[in-house]
Length: 201
Image 1: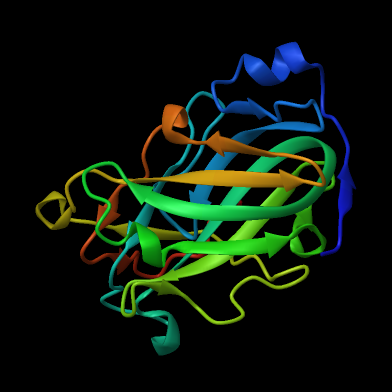
Image 2: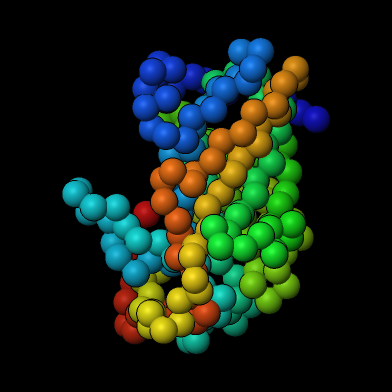
């Protein structure tokens, strides 16, 4: 499997302070999850408040019918060390009934590199099948624009989801979790905001 040397971003003290830090027992790698976002948002991010991203089991008025039951998820993370691969898992905080479906392994060469040196795992979660889409993680995948949606709290699924990353180096394995960064709520249905342009990412 192709390996990729990821650059350290800041000191270990800075990484550890963010609550999503993890490190290999043998010192061969370390990292932290920065954020978990989706292509849908009920609230735009501001200087003082982060955006509220949501998962949607179904879009009631999709502009693209092929995406009516799909939600793109983007996990941004920083890492240091010689990384072979990353396993990404979406986990529910109330039930693990479907956790086994939302798991996939990504070779280091298929991670998207941001201009600031951080990395992103980008994939689609398909509520129609309960599984990742075939070929949903590709080299330099296309990141979709964030779309504003409206939701009804009566349609909210109890709890929410978070992401775990299991990072494998040549000699060890360690895990990062976004659980401490908060949960992403999921709604049984969402409606694209009418006559609205995609939000800036």
